[in-house]
Length: 162
Length: 289
Image (cartoon, rainbow over all chains, first blue to last red; front, side, top):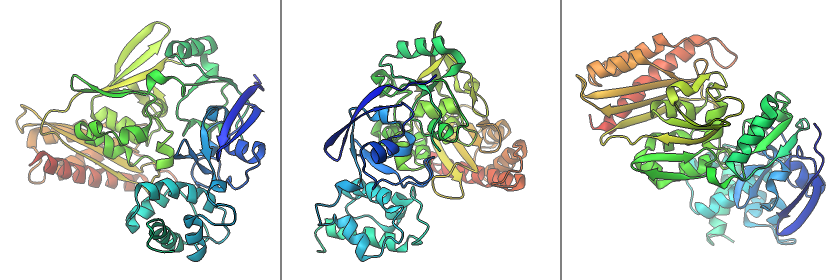
């Protein structure tokens, strides 16, 4: 039973994106292919790797585990929302300085999890940081530099480091 | 992979959802948080012709305490229940167990009712609801019925729900003052499904030891299992001396895990013994014993 017709309107990074989609279109694919925002990466497509994590009405979710039709009327934030023009967001700057990424495939999802995490926990312990990162797989870094980058990002967001 | 094609229905009233399920029969599946069903679709292990999305039914999202009992709408998000101060005060076993479910990103979408109706054989929530003597409210074409948790979980990914019935609410009775509790889980990585998880609830009672015990184990077979031999040990002997160790051994003996790629049977049995022992001691400590 094919079902081709659903109009959806999703606000992504403050901008309205409309489409006429099949209900089986994943939100991750709507973001990448309909909205053309390819910063959101697709890894495992079963909710394990965390690469596709975006903010849905402010909360981090797996965009591969919901359908675009379900996000109709919702507000989505992706990694493209972080930098202000050429100026990196403190999270991005901290990841750059601490070598918190190598291939960068997992990074967009990690950053989107960290944004609300650091807003709620401005001074997290290493254990808190590791817990927050537990829903993300990185096969390059061994996580040490990612943890260091989160520490630095937290300090930057607290205004203690430039 | 990508999901197979399906027709999409998105009712805003519970009655409409039930009518849609009745109209489409076994071809339809309700879509709750989607954190288990969407992977099954993406792997094409499930191919329902129709998905009935429950996410826009506002009446299913409540978390309230009424006359001492906890009432959870089936579509309440796991993260919302985890963060609810009333739940943490009255049913800390539930709060603690939810923190073991996958990751925050999953719990932001995953629902209490979705997990219970899916009944993965290693999931936390069915075990906890069994330990808490929860009651499930189901709505079908013939109306509402209440199913005790002891009859709700019917085997691997099987429940007492008929294909045209919807789980609408979970009701958890009040715990008496002085109830001890513990949830222990062993998993290979943070957020994985449990290799074994144990929920222990010790209520004060008039038994010889003064304890009414619930010991529920999951991960060893086809879903949550009450370990009545272990419960009998605790009801008779209390939690002092080596009673918790004896309860752990009784639970291990009663469990019948199979070898699988994640762990051999003997390892799971040892986990049952160890986690039951530790959970029993922790629950006793919280009881003030």
